[in-house]
Image (cartoon, rainbow over all chains, first blue to last red; front, side, top):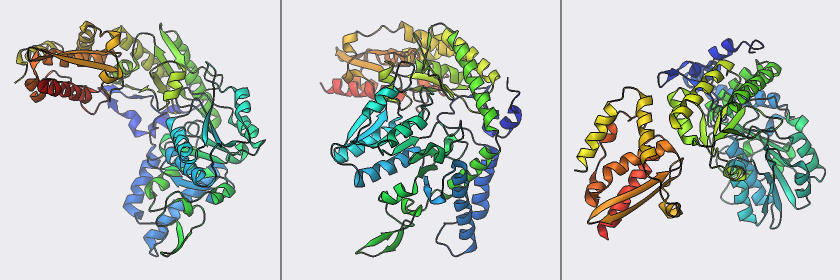
Length: 408
Length: 138
């Protein structure tokens, strides 16, 4: 295993992976929350602040034009990476949450009416639940939830039954942050399109694990965050089909999103600027472009093989520990291993694993309804990235056994 | 101010252990030794908000002193609250409110019990002091 990728070379590009925590080499298994940042992205951020820092879009001076060019160049890189048909379809946002709120706000103010329905699934992150609840509160629309089976897979027939002429949008996660389930989004999008329902995909957890082609998927919206795909924090993307972004009203008002302003009337700017009010996260946008450059150097086919091997290896070894139950046993999974122990609390496990140098996440993972579905208060979640290794999993399993010995 | 003897005992106890694992094992044993709370007391009103694990806390006054009962579904958290219960139990409300809990810095778990960690320590202390304030006025 691991020979398919030069993992040591990959790891050497991530400075954080070489630090020690509590006197032990860091084993970073909290990639579902935030991925580590490669040196090329860190360097790009540094260069921006050292060499290019200025406000974009409106400056006539050279520095501003250079920063604008770098920022817009990032947009083009993302367009190409996602295979979007035009660069105006790539909006910079603060992250996935901001992107979903943008769409929910637009739907609230221009599309949703009382009695309309928004369809989500049982495994959504709070950021793909609460914006829709707010939209429903505002408009009188109704939130419908697609059930899942005990393995953590969407019940496709139930989904099809819930689709109706009342449905105004399907908002669904590509990969579950808690269960790791890869949802059959292509089939789900196709089913929704049969009755002209648009689909938003929460891609926060999928983008770091697979290549996404928005034209192939044919989704109307695809949202994701920079900091989970080896980019900076505070920057993310909303991809939206041009005609849909044209149709939605602006989200926030301010500078940059206008053509003309008078006290009587304001005309809005063209896409993508209509949705990018105020000075954006310029460094973040440029840094995200560098993350895309980094992703473009990777061999995705072998990365997926490597990540699947890691997940299978971890799953097999964790299953051998008495009292552990894996939450999320879908046929198709990516990057996430969530589990509970019949006697040890996830908080205790997370605390002791941290002392042993292993960073995992514990709690409800911002999916409280999903916790209720599985009748647990929280789980311990190890989430992997392309730079993790089988040796790290061995250390994690040993640490987990030691923690359990201390607790039981 | 406060229950100096108990605090000093705890400092001495923790002083016996050199490494983090022994200190944690002691904390875990304190948690295991703290009696469980009756299920009927584990109600919403008694939950300490702000902990990743569930913590329940009740208090009553006897002869001017305050007595706490606490429980948690996580054993390390229960150990942390057991420390506080040991220090605060049977103390006058005023002493509880004014105790700055400097012993926490001295038991060598400062990093582990830092308020920045999501262990709910701050929330527990706040709720215990709030109980003491109310009982003091009653």
